[in-house]
Image 1 (cartoon, rainbow, N blue to C red):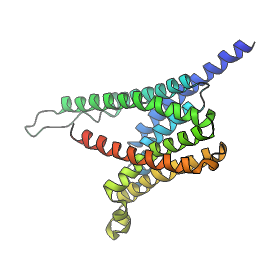
Image 2 (tube, one colour):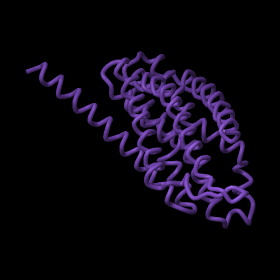
Image 3 (cartoon, one colour):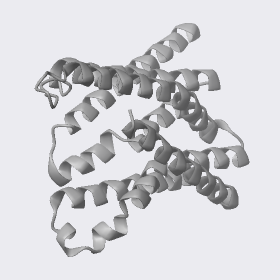
Image 4 (cartoon, rainbow, N blue to C red):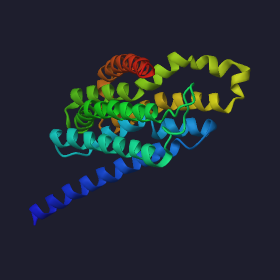
Length: 245
């Protein structure tokens, strides 16, 4: 009976991971169809480093072992990535319909772009999945110092994209320029980027409260600051490289 229950729990967890991956891919794809400020906010909540990273972190946090945490988080990101780009390829077909300057179709260039981005994010999933999964498991099952360090590093990883966007888009300029304050797109950009910073901090506060990590606040603070700085730099380099593809 105990063995049967154990198998049942494992099957349920795997089923939950698959459902989460499908939901993640579908929500990210649906956000592409929403315009204006709402579209930018939805993108931040469903199709961003924060959203996908948090899903991987939570998958690792619910796993029964470090090995399972790394595997579940990675599988979730890989499945979600493949589903998202499959939908782009066969449903939205954003890659088709373009025309080059000489009047010839640009479909091959569009397909090349889809293939490159799929490969890029699959590689990212294979790298980030194990890391976030293990951080999630350590934040729940590790000792106080290790759990605090894991929670802080995770917060930095989840908020790094937001910090990068704040610096590169000069968010304060968007918020203080009268003309831009009334532009729905820029309002959405500002709100979305703020969410990418505020929500990871809320996750950190939740973890610290749930697992009683406040006593290790220096570790939380140092790990968050260091991880956030390095992650923001990594996002900047990634965005620069992607724009050159």
